[in-house]
Length: 310
Ligand SMILES: *Cc1c(COP(=O)(O)O)cnc(C)c1O
Image 1 (spheres, protein in one colour):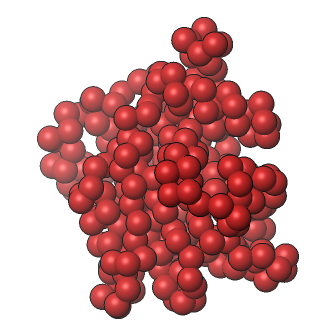
Image 2: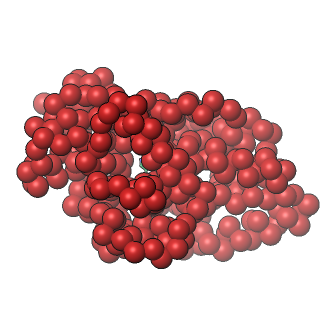
Image 3: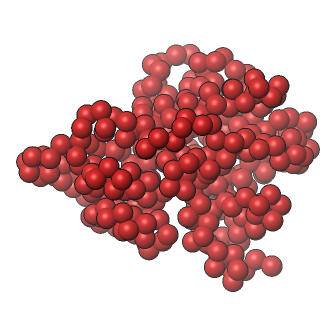
């Protein structure tokens, strides 16, 4: 799949809480409703093409953005796609319907059995003579990190062309891969700015350690990794079907015409706003990275319409 190597747009959204707010629209990354999973998956599929693999196994909830994108890519290349999904997270959503449309096979197992199931499945497929490529959940690992080193370079290019410098970069942090790529970018360029991941699930220190591990895996143990990694875990509770997150999503949609979702970007945008207020940040240039999840926005429309918000 050729996306033309076009950078995703960065939009100036004007004054926000006494700062100038910009948004990098990764949700407009031009493949299957975009998002960070699309940016990461395309790099994995370069490996898959090069190695002439004919079968992909990946891990992720059947309703995840990751599985949607991976199953679309597999279908387009006529590659068999197997998804191991944790039982606890299984739901019918827009993403899971698309995954079904793309014909990916899903095996739902209890979380504790995930590891063994993956190993056994790869073994079985290989014994049938298939050439199997495994994509870690969420597109984790150095390839996924690389995708966000590339994104960081797009941000640098925008700054150069437009004569701006972002003092802060905020985004939703999950497995920490996106976060790690941005931290690597900052360290490689020696940039003096704050990269702030808003945790959508993991508490500290586990969440932050996952980011640190990914940065070290990519670039070795250089100094300053610790200082460069800011992982805020105060807003995890703001979540699915939550009135705060519904309020934020409605507000951002009305204000800017930009859809957020309840699992990732709604939490991150809310977390960013609270962080700015709490730390009394004023007069700065702030970049929010919209990491995608557009199909999730449509999943929450009914909640926005009929929920508690008023
Ligand atoms: C997966 C995802 C994230 C988190 O990305 P990680 O690289 O796992 O930290 C953020 N936003 C959206 C929309 C996602 O799908």
